[in-house]
Length: 593
Picture 1 (cartoon, rainbow, N blue to C red):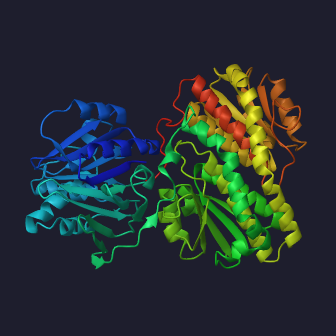
Picture 2 (cartoon, rainbow, N blue to C red):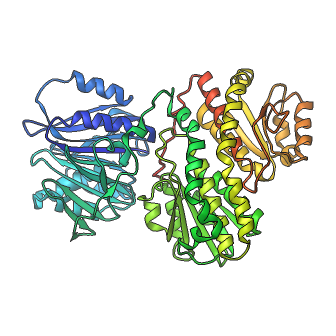
């Protein structure tokens, strides 16, 4: 959700900005823009309410002063103000000297704007971010030090921000962050800034993530401050992936690539953690206290993965669990002895971070994330790294399977370490995890053969039902979520036993009903009820199913079922002409509530 890129290089900055913005497209956006310092000391701003490709065309068509190596760029996902060019970033002060890109929400933007307008500042957009440009402009009247001006400006802000401030007159660049991700990196080509290391991984082997309250000036040497106090520059961290991981290769889209990567991802995870899960050392190494209850705090796909983890923990160890939708955490009441497992693929999900405001001082927090340098990882007492690799498609695929496998393995390890199960039982469970890569591969092969024809039969349907029971229910929920995300068709998941308590009214001639049939005998009654009313049943299960992709089910449920469900959603979206990598209205990293 929104993306930032900035560069201070010796040659023209625009190719770096445009390439970086394209790598940030997966986050979701509705406008894009750049601001680059010119050779004459002014700033040229180019913005578009189309794709980054259109912005690239506008840049190529420009004429005028040569552009220098200092510039900033942004992809915006509208929160304050409609989608129009004047609301696109970068924003400027009254004189055009200061240009700013911003991720986050300025919660006190209204009163700040009223104060600045009363002092004569002219606003040209509807967005909260523009107040930052005028606050910096005002501070520079008193003292020409840009870093000090940014410190003064951010001290007046309430909310969240990742900022890059460019001063065209002095060619200085200052960055700041609080509760919104931002990284800086130094490479042979120059200095780079991004909201996601993936945007600059091609040029940078290491990076430093800003912590809350950091303000940093880039230049020949970096000046680093934390909450207004000068501090040494933190030691850089190696980039977690190669830029080649962001390439499509021979795949038609990133979703297809990431679905195909799942067996390999799971195999690598299991190989890395199997022994430590079976002997309890994986849990001991986290340094967390024992727990009597587990609370999952997550959103979207991560919430469904958390449901699987909780289901496995209840089934294996009889541990009570709570499922907390992060955006509704204010309503949650957790009992003593609870361990909070906060799940977010990006580690920057705003609803999850706000939920921790309620829980982190009262309960130990374990973060399960694909980004160990994220805000969530920094706030948690311990971190589990999914290590799924970069996931570019907005709709999560391989991060779901990685979350499930890592989370289940950690729970098995916790049960061994606490003496709730013995090591023989743990080794049996880990042996089941070792079978998953082959089962996921088989499920993908079967689905690739069956899915296209099934989708052609239901392509015109306006709504879908997904049914499951017990350990299969979270997969029905994930299948429904994927289908609605990608195809823009209504899709709802229900426990199969609830069918006759309301949802059966939706079933008419031809209504598609997808059933996760993992062998629970009571599912057959639900299937019969649907067929009796003319519903078009698609079963994902064992032999005799429409997609015979499942084997014997472990306590984590039929994980391999998620692959046909992902492929079903993708194929329907493609047949309907939808963009499977960038579904409308959605963002990969949801950094606003």
